[in-house]
Length: 98
Image (cartoon, rainbow, N blue to C red; front, side, top):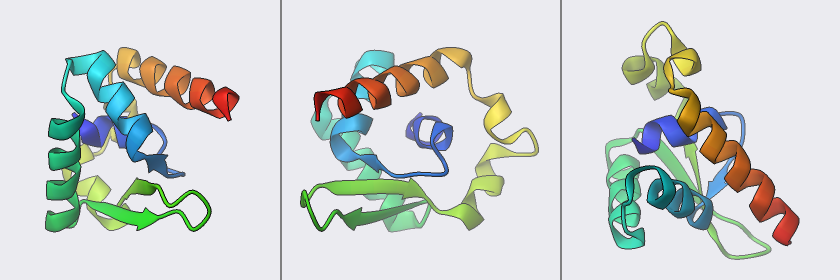
């Protein structure tokens, strides 16, 4: 679930807040559950995490070498359109709030 969300913007980073909003809108997951899932992904090496120096927010990005393992040959094309739309709307809405 989270892998698909992060794969949509695989060329950039998503903040914890952005991921939490997407996961709540798409699957109804709580913020705490989303954080737990992200921490597990970082722990197993599927996801990279870093702290933004300016905002001190956690940001997440898919580990490029691990993406092919679970995305298969289709890559991002295999992600449902609804997920792509939610991520795009969330990214643009958060950007306009700043």
